[in-house]
Image (tube, rainbow, N blue to C red; front, top):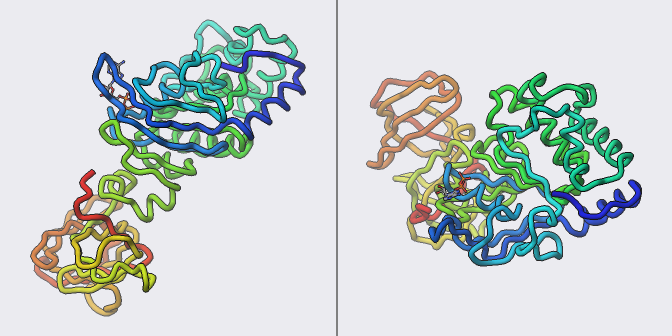
Amino acid sequence: MTMAAYAPAGAVRAAADAADRAGSSVSFDQVSVAYRGVVVMKPLTLNVEAGEILALIGPSGSGKTTALRAVAGFVRPASGRIRIGDTDVTDLPPYERGLAMVVQNYALFPHMRVDQNVAFGLNAQKAPKALTAERVEESLRIVGMSAYAKRYPRELSGGQQQRVAIARALAVRPRVLLLDEPLSALDAQIRRSMVEELAKLHRTLPHLTVLYVTHDQSEALTLADKIAIMKDGMLNAHGPTAELYRRPPNRFAAEFLGRANILPARVEDNGSASGFAKVAVGADSVLALPSSLPNGGGCLLCVRPQHLALQPDGNDVNVIAGTLRDVHWQGELTHLVLDVADTIVRVVVTRPPDLPPAGSRMKLHFSPSDASLIPADAHV
Ligand code: ADP
């Protein structure tokens, strides 16, 4: 998949740079996908800005890959339109969309050396030799694999193979890079360093739009400008990464993005006038980030474990009192079972103090800006 026409290298670069700036946004407009009559992606409307890294996350089977394949042109939407920049690509074949895709299992040609693999897309399009050589060299440099140009894939580690796969994708100068679980075949340590390298790569190519499918929320939180959470073939939440983590719109999003303590609460003042919301949790009244939820209604209070401090006694500002019922130590995290106003609340904390015996009263403290409100009925 690449640009169809070739011109002298400088002109190609200028044209590609212009296209990158003007034409690399991706928009889904009511796009649905069915496999043999079964709808697996319900009408999806989503805009990815030019130069943005969007992470598509969600449980297995939620439709992430399907969304990506629809952009790539490997599946035809049952309804809706897909645009890249100003172009409606819905009816275009994959190779005319200006995209490149990297999948989980490297997919390098085993009988070709690294440089031949990287040159493959350009050779397939009969690009001039000098241009191909220049692009191969540049792409390998970007992914830090210049020294391995003459090796065969079998002579590389998994992480190195995946770098070559990314170089091969970049060599065709895509407007949009589609990454489908590109790191999930690698072990955890290499995955972490590859995430950093992908972030660096995007700094090198800031106009490149990246759609990144992963089931690993930490990859998404590290890399993405925005996150789209899929659930059951539908968009469950979408927003800037930090904002979505800090103020998830629903319980599923809160729990999918990381550990979350979710406590039943009641809105006393939604804070739209005062700046902070006031909610009742059991007999306690605490402040949280403002919300648009109606005053007087039920809601859920969401606080991340690292923002919760346990206080056996002392500070009474923004605290919820409960009775300690049980403690489960799990290495980095400790799970506490507390009774807060007749509700069993499971709380996860990172650094517990010396815990008193079961049956003792405990206080949970958090800063109002680290607590958000979620609709009580949002089991979506
Ligand atoms: P994810 O990437 O989130 O794991 P997918 O997009 O791969 O999810 O799959 C979404 C749904 O579509 C799943 O229920 C899956 O079984 C189904 N599906 C995916 N590909 C096909 C196919 N080629 N034929 C039939 N069903 C498919």
